[in-house]
Length: 414
Ligand SMILES: Cc1cc2nc3c(=O)[nH]c(=O)nc-3n(C[C@H](O)[C@H](O)[C@H](O)COP(=O)(O)O)c2cc1C
Image 1 (cartoon, protein in one colour):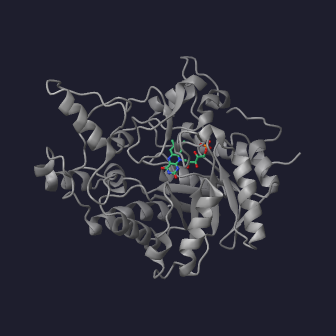
Image 2: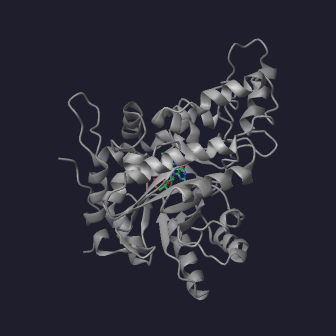
Image 3: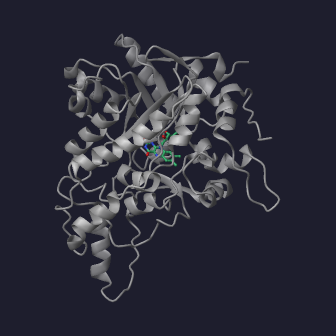
């Protein structure tokens, strides 16, 4: 019987353990988690979601406070078009995060950064270019393009000296999305170095509609694998979403996948950025406590725990401090939903907003408990403490369990 360790991922001239820990914004996949993954010979991710905010918490900068000060005059205004990110400061914050992470890297693995296109930041092209370029400037091993089709993203960085040497990958949920990406990027003379195929059971935003349950990861993987073969294209495929045991991973590796991307099992690792009390919520969750809803202002369905404080909360939009989801004309679906409720309830001290959430604020405060479908199985991966809480795991324990376990077994911590 095989285990994941019988396989190797070849990427950028290196041989790696074929386990990629997926990017989890906002700072849920911390530098510590990515560093452990790289130390153990796999591929870890940091995320650049809300990176100035993350830098403030981690590196004692004051980006958020200063931005809020600059735009305070606009707080009560429903039009957020004036609220712009300063490109120099955005680059500085990204540099802090990437430098601190890459400077601490040990071991033979790699560290990538997850860049979501849907973080449009009131100037989609310009801000994405700065984020990508700065990560490359500061020595990131690779970039995973996420949450969007990224049809123009390669073109944004094609002049960068590292464009052909940094590992560049894309997350897709269908063959059609991959075909579009390859077609639109063809002009840059470069293919992605790897493709993450994210199925309907993943955490975070989903690349499906609310009919997500009609799709199946293995079917999509086979479709993409066979198309690439027919086109004579050799690109490592990395399935993601609901791969919960080493055996689940082996099944995909046997089908021809080059590696797997996993995340949910690492949400209860002590290196993960979620606060310990939130990690207990993940452990406690049953299948009925998990839903896919449409409250994300990005327009993508998102999976989360039903008891996430973000659901129904009606705080005033925080775009002057954050503003990561403002589109190119300075609007966000949450602002519209919030203004509608305020107009409908002029006497209310605080309104309830059910159809959308202020994702920036709630992700920043770990109040939107996004998770994979199999979060309800996390309790089976650990032991209970005497007080009834669940024991957190080390990232090393989870990684090695994926790497060496057989027969659908999950090793419990010592
Ligand atoms: C808490 C959490 C946050 C996530 N955030 C992101 C994100 O910011 N960007 C992204 O591309 N994927 C995100 N994902 C998706 C993961 O990177 C990964 O592809 C997926 O969850 C793998 O499936 P699994 O969780 O069932 O192992 C997130 C997943 C989780 C569980």
